[in-house]
Image 1 (cartoon, rainbow over the protein chains, first blue to last red):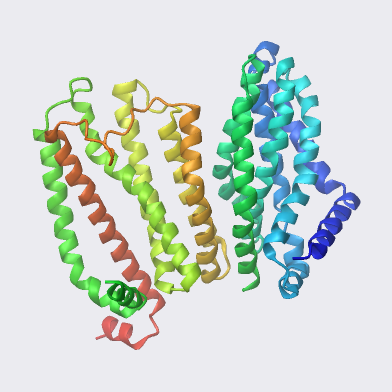
Image 2 (cartoon, chains in turn orange, cyan; image 1 turned 45 degrees about the horizontal axis):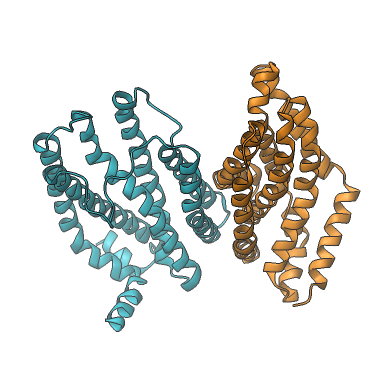
Length: 224
Length: 248
C-alpha cells in the first residue's frame, strides 16, 4: 500500500485548514466560551470550581469536537474528491484514518494546548494539569476517530450537524467518564494511570476498528 | 442440518414466503403471549411470596426484568439483521432491522419507567445516576440515533445501510459503555439471574419470572412479525401477489 495519496490528502487538508483559520479557530473559541458559561451559571467560588473544572473542560472539549466534525467530509462529498478517491483504488481505510488524523490535528491538538488556560480560569488544582494534558492527548483522538464515523454517515444529509451529535454523543460517554475521572483523581492527589491506560485501550480499539465503519459509510454516500 | 439452515435462510429472503408462513404463526404466537402473560403475572403478582427486604414492591421485576433483557437483545438482533443486509443485500433483513428499532426503544422505555417506579419506594428517588440506569438510558439514545439516521437519508436504501452501520458500531460500543459506567458508579443490585450460577431466587419467585421472560420474547417476535408484514405489503405493493391479497 502506498501512502502517497493518503499523505497528499493529509497535506492538502492541513494546508486548507491553515488557509481557512476559521475552520479550527471557531471551535477553539467555542471551547473557551462554553467553559466560561459554567462559573457564570453555577457558582464562581474557586473551591467549587476546582472540583468540577476537569469535567467542565472535558464536556467543553467534547462539544467543540462535535462542532468541527460536521465539515470533515462535506466538502469532499460535494466537490467529488471522494469519488476520485474511490476510483483511484486506494484503500478507504487508510483515507479514513488519515482524515481522522487531520481532524485531530486541527481540533484535538489545539484543544489540548489551550486546556491549561481554561484550567487556570476554572481554578483547576495544580496537581491535575498533567492529568488534564495526558487525558486530552490520549482521549481526543478517540473523539476524532469515532466522530469521523458519524461525519461519514451524515455527509450526504442536509443539516446533518445536529443528527451527527445525536448519533455520536452516546458513543463518547466512555471517553468522557475515564478522562474526567483521571483529572478528578489527579486533583485530589490520587493515582490516575489506570484511567489513562483505559483511554489508551479505547484509542487502540478505535484506531483499529472505526476506519472500517467510516469506509463503509463513505461508500454508502457514493452509491446514491 | 446445515443444508436445512441454508434453505431456511434462502426462503427467509423471500417476502412472499415469509408473509405466507407467518400468517400461520400469528395466532399461535398471540395465544402463547396472552396465556404466558396471564399465567406469569398471576403467579408473580398473587402467588409469589413477598420479598423479605423489599416487600411487595419487588413484584415489578416481572415486567422490568423481561423488558430490560429484551431491550438489550433487540439491539443485538437489530445489528445482526443490519449486518446480514450489508453483507448479503437481503431486503428482508433491512425491513426487520427497521421494525425492531422502535420496538426495542419501547422496551427500553418500559424498563426505565418501571425502574423509576420501583426506585421510588426502594431507593427513595425516581432517578439516580446509577450505572445500570445510565447505560439503559444510553441504549435508548442509541436506538433514537439509529431511527433518526434511518429517516434522515434521502433514499430509503441508504437509510437502511447507514442505520445498519451505526447499529454495528453501537453493538461494539454497548459493552464498553456498560462496563465504563459500571466502573464509574453503581448502586443497582447485581443481576439476579446469571446463566453460569445457580439462581439466588426462591423457585416460587423464579418460575413466574422465567415465564414472563419467555413470554416477552414471544411477544417481541409477534410484534416484529406483524410490523415486518406491513413493511412487506408496502414495499411489494406493486407485485401481483400482494395485489391479489389486498384486492381479492
